[in-house]
Every structure is written in C-alpha cells, then in structure tokens.
Length: 315
Image (tube, rainbow, N blue to C red; front, top):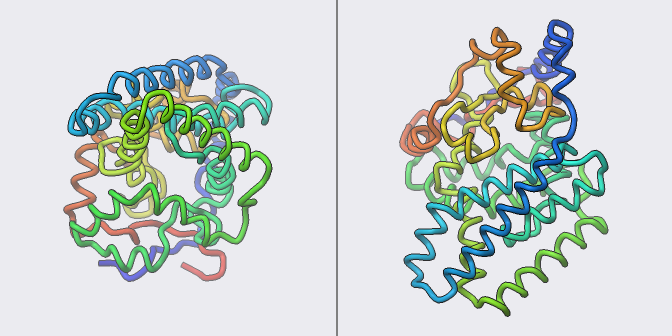
C-alpha cells in the first residue's frame, strides 16, 4: 500500500478551468443562481420518508433494513445532496433560508449535520485537498489502520458516517459551533423524539438506518470515493455519469460542480454539454456499484490514493 498521499504544489485546477470556461462560453453565466424548486423536492422526499417510517412501525427488523437499503438510503442520500445544494445557497438566495432548508433535509435523516457540513464543505472548496483545511481527507492514522486490506475497507465503509463526523477535528480553520449549530441540534433531536413518540422505535430506526446506508456500504456511498480518489495520475477530481444521478440530483457531475459551484444541480449537465472539450477527456466513472467493489477489493486502492496540496512542502 502507499505510505503517504501524493503531494503537489500545483494550484487548484478548478479555479483556472472555471475562468477559461466562462471566458470561452459567457452564456454559462445564465446557469448560475438558486433553483427554488429544490425546496419542493426536499419536502416531498421528507414526507415520503416519514410515510415509510409510519408504514414500517410494526414490521419486522428484516423488512425495515431491506426497505432502508433499497429505498431509504436513496432518499436520504438525495436529501444529503439537497443539503449540499443549500450549503452553496442554491435553493434560495439568502444565507438564512438555505440554512433552514439544510436543517429540513436533516429531519428525515435523523442526524443534525447541516450547519457543520455547510462550514466544512465550503472549506473543502476553498482549500481543496489541503490536509489541514479539507475534512474530506483521511487522518494519517486512519489510512495506516485501514491499509489496502479488503475487510478493513468494508469496516471503514460501515463506520464512515462516524468517521466523517470526527474528521473536522484535524482542521485548523472553521467555526465548529454557533447558534445555528445549536438550533440544528435542537430541531432535529426534537423531530426524532416526535417520531419516536408518535410512531415508535422501529419508525425512528428506519430513518437512522436509511442514513447509515446512504453514506456507507451502499452503491450511493461510493460517491465518497468517486469524487477525489485517484484513478488517473494527476487528476484530482472525478465525475460519475451513471443512472443513479437520476435519483441523486446530478451529484455525480463533480468536476462540473467544483468548476462552477454556483450552478445548481439541474443545470450541471448543461454545463458539460456547453464545454465538452473540458470534460470529455477527463477520467469519469460510469457505475457506483463497480466503483464500490473496485475500491474494496483492489490492492491498488487505499485511503492514501489522493492528491494533496500541502503548502508546507514541495511535491
């Protein structure tokens, strides 16, 4: 396995590419701006998840886990994508209204992550692949513990929700707690308690298990590897153009998103179509399922398979 990340002193590639695309295709600017219809999708998916939780409140644990894997994970992953849209202010115009929508996304997920994610994800964009500022990068001890061993990577995936929650501890920037964070926790915990009191333990567990699968050992969980793990030497970011984009609000268009993160999900395919010469040559994934299996079972893949922009050292 690798003993460290691959280091580079090259600048963020997305900054330069975005300038070139806007200069060459000024109509791209017309795609920029919030997409308020996303709020309707957030409400509908939340209602669907609450309805399923109610319908499963007296069912067997086996059925609950099956529905959580087959349907709930896709729904809660979609809510995570909408939360991601909200953190970029792509649902409405104002900061506060997008923060509110992010918290709404958390309701059916059962975990109060919206405000913290907003903080650390924006750092991910401004300090892409910088170890001390990007929570998307693994701890050194994490990579050395997991190695390239298949069963350890499976455990890593199973626990990824909790790993992702503690990674911001290594960052040197980013406000960890504020009044919005407190409101996020109070509202989501109160909603969890309401589901528990009205529908019972199994209903609440359905929502939590759905979230557990949505970022873990599931085809949609492959997104965490797809976005920045190295599959082509020198390429930092990767897109996915498979069928699950239809259920994930085009989150697979990740190069496009990093290039112009003010373009909402609905228009990302249009960006790719407008500037194909910038995206067609790039390595991209076509199957999250294949990617998940490749990452787990390939000896060539480990948590150090990342390009890191460390300003304290040379490549």
